[in-house]
Length: 179
Image (cartoon, rainbow, N blue to C red; front, top):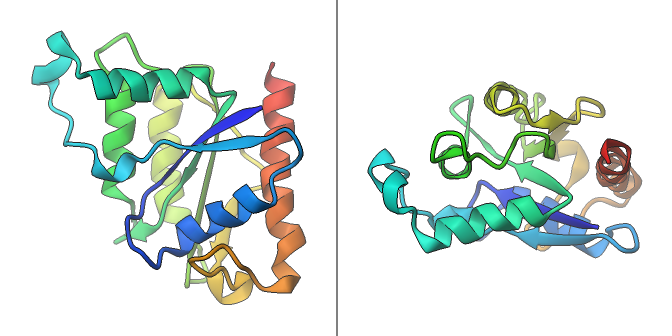
């Protein structure tokens, strides 16, 4: 099974990327996580729709070929990361050629707050619902890093390991059930 993912933080000490590194190290057998590298995309502009860039076609193809899409976002001023929203825009265009319809998607995020990116994730769910993505609703992944202890290198507090593994396993199970 192939799960494409995007992380909305380019920071070298990103705890959201640390979460994905943990999942990469602890993915269930037969599950491959593939980074879509969305943090350096140029800003979407509809003027390119008639001559869609090759890199954007490859990005959309990677999503199409994946069994599921994992979106991990920090929360910036109660919003998802701009890079995530831009990547969703690229994946939804040109009009009528989006890649999110019917795609199993899981939204997650880590922050040092008690609400663990909940507001940003709700914004993303609304946008993805518009595109008819199959969103995993439960378990929600509003991860408070004061409890989880996720480090940029993918290490986590020992008491969090099973919980964090269970989140990825729930998504894998959702993908299987969606087929």
